[in-house]
Length: 183
Length: 187
Image 1 (cartoon, rainbow over the protein chains, first blue to last red):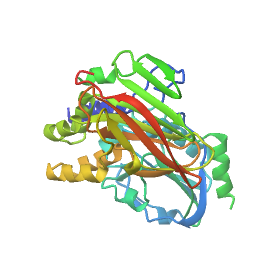
Image 2 (cartoon, one colour):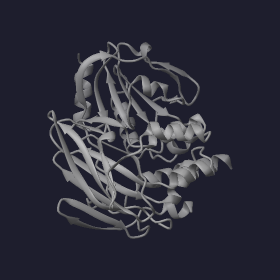
Image 3 (cartoon, helix red, strand yellow):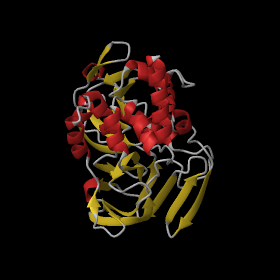
Image 4 (cartoon, chains in turn purple, orange):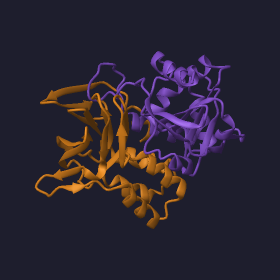
């Protein structure tokens, strides 16, 4: 019952924040489209990120040196976060076996809530979903709103970021990430 | 209540007046105002009191605390950079002006945090609240957008104008959404 309540609450939140119509014509009520740009920035050391995932395994960004890491801060009630999630999985699969990793960091929610969301997706997510239950990681990364995404290079430096929803497997995004991987 | 909220997905009608769009969800009656000015697009969509109560109670707010929030005039707020260069916004610079009253600042997340601590809202619920509100300040690259709730101390069905402010290319700009109306109790 508790789980059903959580799902109802999550759906409620989604509908509430979505506020989007079923129609596809572009007008005031439609949310903006997912974009496909990354804002490059002067490299700077990434803050520490060491959190448990929804299965209890610990992930430490420091141990991913040598890989380019896409770090996405999100929450299930955040509509653009939900919309971009399948494309993050497609990106992850497209770059599977290469020096690339995705870490999705959920803020302030528990594993049950996240499972309720991921089980609704047509796409199974294979990248780790970390739990930032106190939002301290978000504060350390100076995240002001959700979703926010960072690209960390092989040396552990933030080299690009994105605010708002993205189509992560768009060719522009893949090229931008491959450019960083090639450095 | 929850089922009715879940039926937000509905047909909309919309009109454009002098750079501003207005639309109403035919099913829920909730309205959206949108303005584009220079590099910024700002959109406000009504959130009904029932939606606010349901959303926060589902995230650990007591009925009393949720009611305190629902007593405000609440909007889902979307800001998007539709220009070619980065823009910055600071919600503290925005002002709303109820009819016949002086301009006011939007209550900040910091102020809300004080209220919730006084009301004994637990940390997890306060975190959810914090991230559901529109960010206090952000820089948007071209194409970036974000959303969150903003609140206005205006009675149900009351009207106000909103002056939004942003910076681009070292200059401060502003635009206005006029005659924005708060949701009814029964919306």
